[in-house]
Length: 264
Image 1 (cartoon, rainbow, N blue to C red):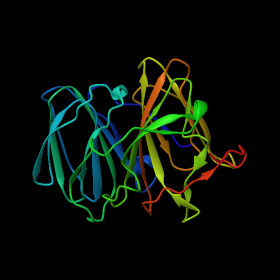
Image 2: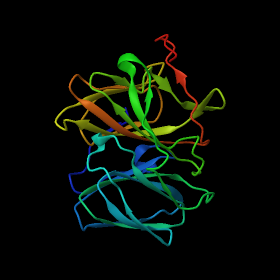
Image 3: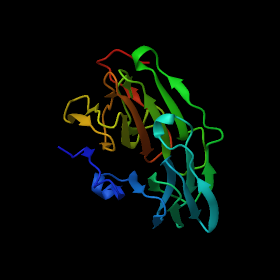
Image 4: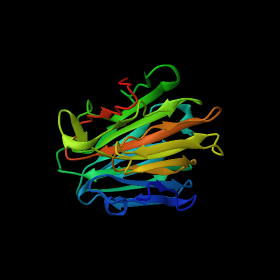
């Protein structure tokens, strides 16, 4: 069975470094920095396009030969305010200095040089409800299909209230058969409020050849190489996750689990 639950390396510095090779797939990369005020991080994008997401805190950023100033506003992700992000194309470099303690996600996928560096949000990002009843959650779309400034990346934030389900009804996007379904690899970066709590995520295929149910802690990453991938927040615990998806086509087309009989 593949190792789908990835724990952070620690609490400081680069605490996640999930490459396609490490994940056993071809498209999605995910890194995460936890920095103290005054600390520095820098990378070259190489063959990948990158979206830097200011999950928490503020940082001054230079990228693709330009000074982008200070990005970031919210000090806690559970403020639910729209994030500040920066798109950096392949063949470029980025560097940042933490203005406050901060958490910065590095979302990556193979780039084709089709787009220039640009700020993403907070303007134009509106927290939007999805689902109903205990399936209700709230979405900050950073770079989904309607936002045409990436070659491959699809990135979004999801806030799931305590006691609710998310990424539900169960669905999959693991076949390259557009427009019926598209093949997209996916990572979930989880945060929990309170941080001492836990969430639950299951990843399973229709034939159950892959079937893992994981207790996720604050800061964990779950890999979704294929199959359905619902998650749930227990009573009293809010769940946040940052999704990164990419595949051969920049389209999100999925199929629900037929055994559930729920299409919404």
